[in-house]
Length: 351
Image (cartoon, rainbow, N blue to C red; front, side, top):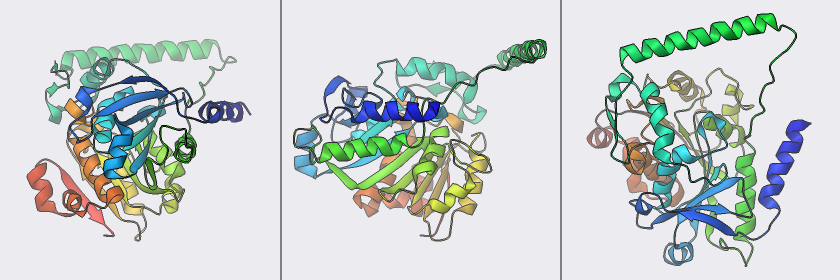
């Protein structure tokens, strides 16, 4: 019941005011490298989400026609999309409107990533140059040992506390996001596209929609992939395998009806094994491509303009949602893949 009311409140927050009302905006990395400079927007009529879009939306639509739509779910199923801001801003600069779970936030992207990187990226990555030019090195063996010892100490203290208070069970914090939010924001965009007074009136190509998620967000994507409006899914560092997460299981793969793209960080990615299982289990009538880099679970999201992961995502979306078949080479031609990204490996089936 509690979760039902939470869902109702969040949905109402997105649908309560009919017309889009831009309340906040910022430009990230000069608006990206694409032909249309992008912006990050907080909308008063949909406060639970952040929109990434070209800055001069009406002018871009007049030039290009209605723009394809992306609905995005965050890593760890967080209610915050700052960690994917560089990639989403970059994608939007190529003529897409992306609605991401999580309210508008002006937090420092680099500060968000710095703590993650030192403990998360694999040894194969070596040093990393972040988008702000800062060089990040991995944890030293001494730092890793100290962290492991501290974690062991914390587990021991938690076990003692649990034993002392057997009757008192710790409260499990409720999820702040859920898969259906992706469909709810798609409903909002659909409403805005049909409302003459809206900023988005006749700006959105709602027959060209992608669902994209990172890590736990990928499980949320699988949870709504049955919806016929979703024409392709992008799974970033994600796979369901034999897990159950956010209501999705391996059975969710049976609901797929659209081409699937898995962008995985190689064996060092905690999603690697699950993604391999997904690839094998996806039905023979569903086109699927999997690319593997050596970047681990954090991908290249902290690099300038979202790094190589953003480049791959743009190419996939251009192919699948805009019909630009020339972009398919990265996914269908091993020689081209080797030329563009020598360290990546790719597999595909059902094409």
